[in-house]
Amino acid sequence: MNAKQLYDEYMITSMVAGFEPVTVEQASGCVITDTEGREYLDCFSGIAVCNAGHGHPKIVDAAHRQLDKLIHCCTYVYYSPRAAELARKLAQITPGALQKSFFGNCGAEALEGAMRLAKQFTDRTELVCLTMSFHGRTVGTLSITGNYSRKKGTGPYLSGIAFAPAPYCYRCPLKLKYPQCGVACAEFLEHVFRYQTAGGVAAFIAEPVLGEGGIIIPPPEYFKTAMEIVRDNGALFIADEVQSGFGRTGKLFAIEHYDVEPDIMCMAKGIANGFPLGAFIARPDIAEAFTPGDHLSTFGGNPVSCAAAMANIDVMSDEKLPQNATVRGDELMNSLIEFKEKYSLVGDVRGKGLMIGIELIKDKNKTPASEEASQIRRLCREAGVLVGIGGVFGNVLRLQPPLVLTAEESQRVLDVLEKSLVTLSEPVK
Image 1 (spheres, one colour):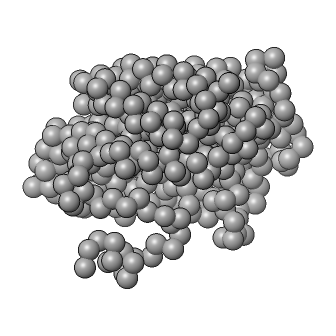
Image 2 (tube, helix red, strand yellow; image 1 turned 30 degrees about the vertical axis):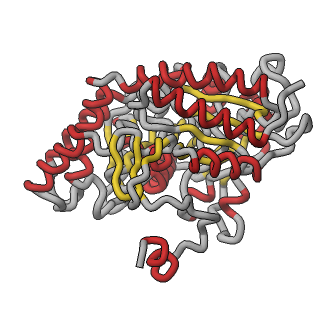
């Protein structure tokens, strides 16, 4: 039996709308190879995970060396050198006064722990989040996710959650235009705090770039305005960098684009380049709010994953991967903006670094072109390029390749995308 047949018979896959018909055998750099030897240029990185490229030799070697020493001991029963070293490194590279880390296994676990820590530190229980956001698939993280399609049919959810409008300029929920709007979506947070809560908000939780929501890029002023309101209301700021962190946007962390400092920051995906690891890091005074028995993770801070994460951070610095993300991202964006002028199917192009969204529309009313997005993905795959799809309407093509992408690979992506757009799109008249 092949992998697809085994999946069909033995794995729960009914929650997946449709698999890409690619059976991955191996990968290196930006290239995935299937079981029949066909190569694909990977522009999705396992959902923004393999930021340093598939199978980076320095990261693989670090994991191998740790495997020979120790695989598991439980980091929260015994002292683990690799976890300790990684915690110190995160304190050195994260913004502001963030210093103390807790390690889990994934992004959802990081968000769950961050929420609990914020509540215990503030002695408050409410949370303010964003519409169109996505934070995970546990009950807690779905509770703070502002996306109906992810939440339907699996409640009840946590109480005490309020939502502010997403900073989605292309489809502004307030029907305004940037910059004339004065970033009203950020100002609206005051309304949320005042009228949608009971005055006991522990934290404002936001992605610096909304990934699953369709690569939504907040305006430059958004977080400064938002933070003034959050601080005035005595709440903390939890930055969800699970998808946008570790060089993806051209900075080591996307919140650095906005010149504000989070009180707690969540990380996963790109932290260990494919090894399972999640973390949240907090100011020391906040971190000490946990008391014995409040939180734990059996596999959190696994020595092998921590060793890989340390090597990954070194690779980011030594090979200047965030800087490469900026250069390659600018190349892609410049051409994609031209596509917007040439092809009616392209409604909006937005991104930072190598976190890019191409929103497809059917007409001047911005009717989401979800079916066309799926067809574009298919055409790209058939031409040997793998892209993602996202957005609350399923109409946003997502380009999130490994940050080791070369200029030649970048041009190949553009060539394949344009050929696909020509097939389905009418020229702009």
